[in-house]
Image (cartoon, rainbow, N blue to C red; front, side):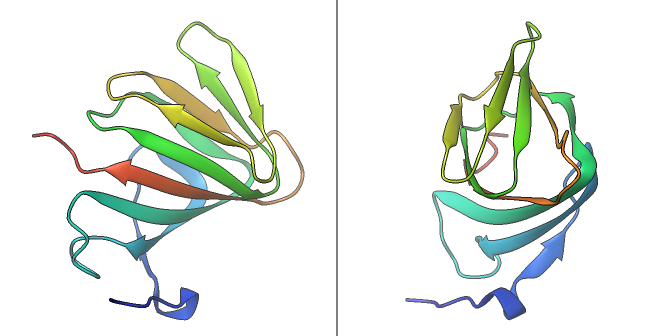
Length: 114
């Protein structure tokens, strides 16, 4: 077992993201977890992620605030606290915090299949 406290979580750069800070809670390099990783993302108002797909599955769980997920077809899905969404590998999405308050999201994802 390996406990990680928020004060010890390391920030990382998330490609294609803006006005946000991402922290690694569980990861191969930090705790040795092998089949998935867990991150905590803090988005400022207007922050988000560009339209893109990943070659791994993702689950987003809103902790606080509100984020809008935009699908490749332009559908908008609003995530509020304790609402989650599953995004399959290869599916495109964009994210935006349309509110005037910060938003915090838990990210659970498989490792890249390269």
